[in-house]
Each structure stands twice: as C-alpha cells, then as structure tokens.
Length: 386
Length: 241
Image (tube, rainbow over all chains, first blue to last red; front, side, top):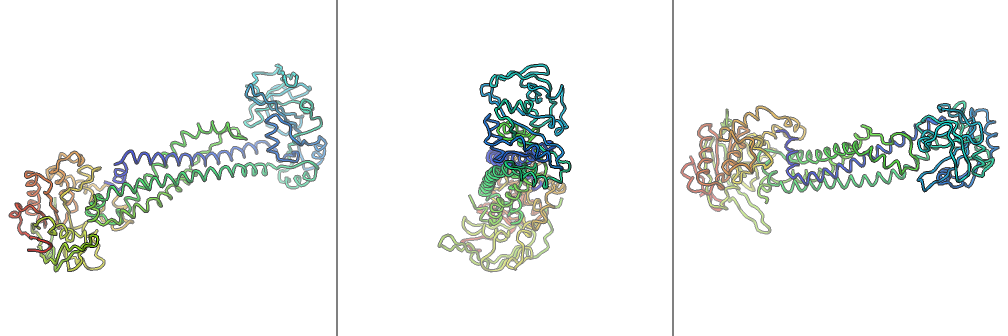
C-alpha cells in the first residue's frame, strides 16, 4: 500500500467533512482563477482592440474623457467641445498622416432598451480606418447613413432602406453597411459630420480628432505640439490603455484581496479538517508508531493529507473555472463600462500554476501544525487515548 | 516462508533494577519498582499478574514504546538507555506488537492492515519516504501468505468491521509478523475473546514460537493459560514475585 493511497483513505474516512472542505477550496480556487483569467483576458482584449484601431492618438476637448464618454452614452451634452478650427491646426503638423474629425452623440430610447450612437465623420475616416470593408457607398448626401454591422442587425435595415428618427424628425437613407470589424465600430450609425453637428445643435464643434502618424515613433513630438492647442487635450493610445488599466487596477486589487481572504478561510477549513482528523485518529497514530512509524513518517503522512486536500480542491477549482468562466463572462460583460469584443477571459496554464503554487503554499503552512501535533504524540499515550 | 528473523543474541531481553514512574496530577505512581528480568531467544514467556500489576508497562518498555525512569534494559543486544538509540527503527525491524484491542485501521482491508508496518519500510527520515511510496510486491505476497497462515486467506479484502474479534486478532498477529521480527510482544491478546477463539489465538502464538523459534512474550491476567508458557514471570504491584 502506498503513502498516497493511505492518505486518501484517511481523508475519505469522513466523506461529508472532507467533501465540504474540498468544496470550499474548489470554489475559492475557481473564483480566484476566474478573476485572474478575467483580468488578464480583459487587458489583452482591450490592448488588441486599441491597437487594432490603427489610431496613434486622439485630440479631445479639455476635461475628463471618461465623463464625456459616459455623458454621450446617456444621450447628454458634454460640457466642452473642440472648435472645428483645431482640425486645421492638427492637419498642419507635418508628422500627421491622417486626422479624422468626429462628432459623436447618442439618442437614448429607454422604451426599447437601447441607445443609438450617431457618429459624424468625413472621408478622412475611411483613410484612417483602411481596414473597414464597406458594402454600398460612402456618405455623399446630408441624409446618408452607413450602418455598423450590429446596428444593421438591430435595425433590420439594409441598403436602400430609410430610417426615421422621430426625436429629430429626420429620415436617413441607408447607403452603406460596414462588415463586422470586431470592435465598437460595429455599434454606430455613421452620418456626415455636418449633419451630425446640425442634428445635435453643435455646429462647428467636434468631440474628437483621431490621428494616425506617418511614423508612430513621433508620438511624443506630436503630442507636445498638440498640447499647445488651446482647449484641446491629447491622449495617446498607450496613455489610454494605462489609464483604463489603472481604473481596473483598483477594482482588481479589491476583488483579489477578497478572494485571498476566501482562500485563507478555506485554508483554515483545511487546517480544521486535518486537525480534527488528527484528534480523532490519536489511537491510530499510536498504532502506526507501535508498528514502526517514526515521527517523520507521521508528520509526512498528515502533511501529505493536507497537501492532497488542497491539491484536489485546486484541481476541482480549475474544472469549475473552466466550466463556469464562460458563463460568468457573458454575465460580467453586460456590466462592464467598456467591454471589448471577443473573449475577456483568458484561462492560462501559467495563471493556474501560479494559483496552485499559492494554494499549496498555504496548505504547507496550514498542514504544519496538525502534522506537528500528530508527530509529537507519544506512542503509549496515543494508544491509551479515548 | 520465514516467519521470524533469527535471534542469536543472548539474552534477548535483559533488565536490571527497571523502574518506571508516572505522574498522575500531583500523585507519583511507581508502575515498576525495580524489575530484574532475563529472557532468552526462543522462549515463550508469560508475564502474568492482576490488572495494575505493571504487565503493560513492562511490555511497553521491552517493546521500546517507552523509556525506563531508572535501571538498565537491553533489548536484542541494544542498550536502551544509550544515547542515539533509534527506538522507531529498532522496533520496526525487530519487534512485533499484538494488542488486546486489536487496533486495526478501520479504513483498511485485512491485507492492507497487515501491510501497514511495511509502509514505514527502511525510511528513517522524510527524504527516504519516497522509497516507501510504491507498492512493493514482495511485501504484498508476504502479507497474503501470513494471512493464509493465520487462517484468513479468504478474508483478505474484508475490512475490520466485517471481521469477528478472533479474525481481527489474527490480522493483528499477521501484521506483527510482516517485518519478520525477532521478538513478538502480545499484551492481553485474548482479553477480548471468547474461550474457543482465545484458545485459537493462543495456539497460533504457541505454534509460531515452536515452529519458527520466535521469541514470544505474552502479558495476560488469565491464570488458566499459565501452564502453557515455557516460563512465567509473575508480577505483583510492580515487582517480580
């Protein structure tokens, strides 16, 4: 009979207790693994999405861009807009390849549970976003509209159809459809810049200018030049990503702290289970000593039981995370302020190994006291115990 | 199959002025009060006496489960008072124990219970535990043969809860023999058994001594068994009388 088999038999001598302890460990590891995977997946998806935009920097009005984005999504007016002449200043910078102006606003339709986002653009956007695959034609007339691929599905409209906007009493002609891009571009109505400005009563105003540089290495130089423009603020994509990650970071730290506490509580559960088992088996430990087991053997056996309990909990947690993470992702994505397209959960073996190392590390500590206690039992006193 | 390792050391057990005192609260109890004892290899010795006479204490000292407070004790040529004597290793290699209450592991089968002492193998510290991890076929065969020897060839896969008292004690005897000991100690091995089963177990111990020359020391309060030992050591209130 092997040590491992013997340890397993000891553990499952009390099925209910061991199963409950295993359950708590499994859930704790699953939650930790899912959170770590979510964090890593979200970061990756966000990076991919931002890099896929082909935009090196953006000029936005002075103020908090996140607050502005939030206001737009709620259909409100942002406090500051960029004057349209800023575009000329930007285009005059020699390092700038393309500068695409944009006016963005939204119409909230609570009865239908949707928010329609209208983006006013001009032909420079087509040059900036050269990966766009457009079916139909680009905007030429004031009432033309191009539908993002998700919008097309929601509106159930196609090229040649008309869309009536009762809030603005405007009828738009669908002239083009965007093939799926895999990012947020799929969710917008694209209309001519001047139409958007007029429709939302902000003539000669912009919500942002997206910029592609001839050489991305010139970003600091261009950022410095753009920084001198009055009322404008420059955000490089690196900064944007960094800020988003910082925002995510505080929430992540809080969540991870909570999960760490859960893991420690689970480890205490493991300690309790093994310690109880040691108390109950005092006589058996006496028999083992009588049959030649040394203190090291008893210590090793009890420690092995703790490690196995944690290891089984860890493997169970992995299984649960693999099954549950995708389902959880669907729920969580609905509540994310900025949900990138694609999967935001990256179940990586490296993360799992790291978590297992952490769990086993805790198990090593948790198992030490029960193992020491068992090993210290004197054979005849252990045999006499009731 | 070799049941026991050859015992060539003379005497197998040698005790002089053996004293063991315990503390029970403020009270000090002298369980053994200066025992002199000499047991030769191959003897079948009965340590008899009433409850509390010191039989178990004496067996625990001989079985290296406890240390004497005073006096000297040599077991199979090893001076137990000497520093550095590893009781666990000595006990594992040389001594088999049978208890009144069988002390079988409830979660293990009869065969696994017999195999228990082999699990500790030759491991002396944590670094050697790995060597005991794999099932060793020779140990398994020996355990199975021992169970057949004690008449439990058909009960190997049964757990203690599925065995009778006599069968459990037979498993305990097989377990005590699995490491080919030189000395077999049995503390009231028939105390919890009916007369017929008692005789069966006692005859088994007797046969082990007679057929393989195993030195057997049996502690019992059953005076009716006295005549069957080759020698009787009578204890009374911690003294040999």
